[in-house]
Length: 138
Image 1 (spheres, rainbow, N blue to C red):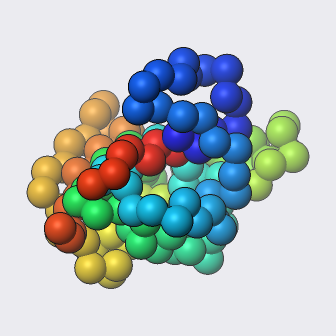
Image 2 (image 1 turned 180 degrees about the vertical axis):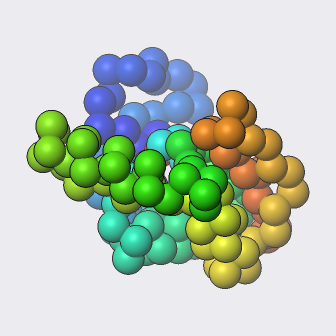
């Protein structure tokens, strides 16, 4: 598991906390499954693609993406939220639309097995590709 705060998850028999750069992390092993939860909006569009490529390159069977996304009609509201958060935190955010995240997955050769939108904001995508050794969670 790669996480900024290694105090949130308890290490167990098959769980190990790793502090690493999610854009360049190379585990020297491919994980069976990966979970990405609310990562994309912290990355620029270029880094979003680099991140997804890295996750998919290091995953054998499937990836579960859980992200806060916007409907295309809410583009103005999304930009306003990004500006407020950047002003108050100093951290630039890049929220994706549902379609942008879906297209990023498909562009990288993954198949969407299931998709679920919760309260029109949380998009969960279950993807699979290839034919293990563990679980990578971000």
